[in-house]
Length: 287
Image (cartoon, rainbow, N blue to C red; front, side):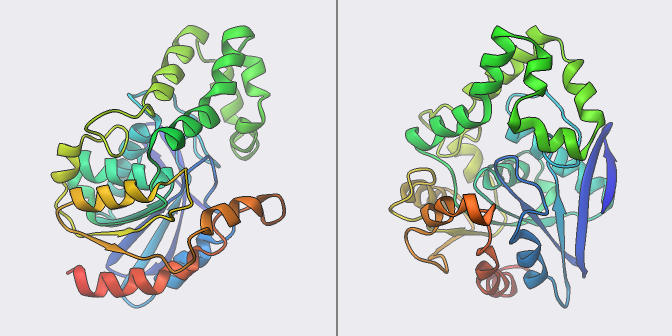
């Protein structure tokens, strides 16, 4: 385990493998970099010429809590660009699933010097998926801060992993001005609202068209309301250098992994199946 100081934020990270080409794996939710399946995918990608950066985004795992910016994914995208600069690792292949795909996209759009390529799967979108995300991320926090105080927010289960893995985060959370905190978290919640001209929230379709690096987009399952197939197909159509491919699993993959969360404790246990497709694409599309 290692830490980097990025614009005053402590970011926890690991690097797997050695090589001139750097990949970054970014997760969604508030899952940590040691979630089952993630390091296995990194080890499968790492090899001759490749190394993989795993990191805890601000507000997850060992990294600091931070409440600023137009949206949480945009704040995390800025942090990722800063982390790559601090470590001297860019440009990198930005790979991610769920909201990690948003963070990767926003990093490439706002920090093009950080991106050598994009690899994206389980791309969140559509009215049901985005509204469920906004509720899952922020409803309990907003309601608790509004009706009680920051101590009650710190007691919510969604913040427990960050407070346990980084003890200083408790004081960071308790020190938040409640009114400013509420304004920020409500702004972040609203940023997940579906809007015309944004296949991915926070990234205009014009902004997506401006991303010029090679991209690999895995088609989402038709059964998946959280990461609609139409969103993955539309995104692949917007990105000039995109290749749309079928995933290495069945149509109900996300739903099946979600159903197993109580026992497997990870949505990502089968992510290593992505490695052969990712590696073959990189060998063909990246220079």
